[in-house]
Length: 426
Ligand SMILES: Nc1nc2c(ncn2[C@@H]2O[C@H](COP(=O)(O)OP(=O)(O)O)[C@@H](O)[C@H]2O)c(=O)[nH]1
Ligand SMILES: [Mg+2]
Image (tube, rainbow, N blue to C red):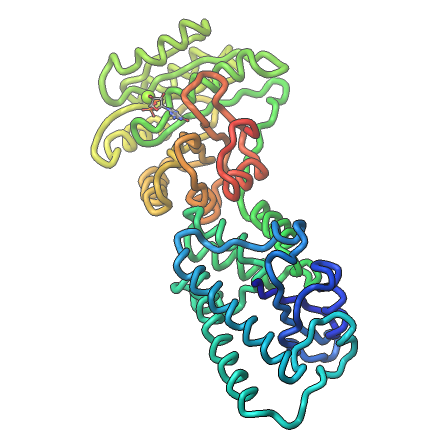
């Protein structure tokens, strides 16, 4: 047995919607006025319908939100209680005709016919139903999350699926609450009626919340210098190779690309990039001390794109960051350097934030997230860019050079966030 709710400006409008959605089967359990008519505001009624799951049209079944899987015990309990309610409701309908199969029985503003004299048996059943209804409400609220008392009371059932997806995505709790708040406040009432329209609206809000820096073709005569910074092992060198291949031969226009390796650790660690440079026949310069940085850029001035890889190893990247900072600070060339902070999407939001704070002093322009193929949840990425207001420029979705690189787009990130990473959609 499923308990469904429908809303409308009048009870009969809500009933019409119910009929359109689930046909004539089902039983009217309750009619509530959930919003009083006021100046400039329509009244809002909600009707509660109980329907046997087998009688639900197949098109409707698929739209009923499924609660979180890890709460299966609660689900079971909830189902049993719902079943009890419907059984009790059926008994009442037999005894007193209070709840009726809703076909042709209720089509106006007035409440359903009610016998004035109630038998003791009927009263007992009603009390029982009230108790069970309260229990269902408690269980429904537990499906949301115990930690968010303010938002949970406002979340309508149509939001269940989207709320579950977002809260399982690793998104920061406060961001999720803001997101739900904004969605609830701004969503037109008529869009709230089913989970499909709720989801669409929610996706629109998500898209607007996440900053993205789209790749633009270089305008004539301009050059771009891009430096990848970030912890060791996140995929900077691999990404430099992917970008180098992209700019030098994968785009419509073929650009001249040069590489710089800023080696703050030990000579020899540059070999990985040297190999890529040889394969792609690209100029490459190595910088060990900061004064060499400007010289390296000058010697690659024939290039349209100069890509700078940084490496080094020290606890919390402190020495490395200081050295990079010095290079940027003593840059005497005409080039401004676009600093891209590279981070793996496989670590949780709190760790991403610590990494960001470590590298923030370098004046981060954009964020690049790697290893999207190694994670199932993407709310951490969303939350970091939302929190820092730093746009995302690229995603790395695997180890293969050059193909596993995706230019950032809102659609791609939101798709990952709600449905997981899908290589075919990259
Ligand atoms: N699965 C996966 N592995 C990656 C990705 N990007 C880089 N890697 C791997 O991560 C390891 C470290 O990469 P590297 O570019 O050397 O990291 P760096 O220390 O930041 O320069 C290598 O084994 C790469 O193949 C990615 O998007 N997905
Ligand atoms: Mg490297």
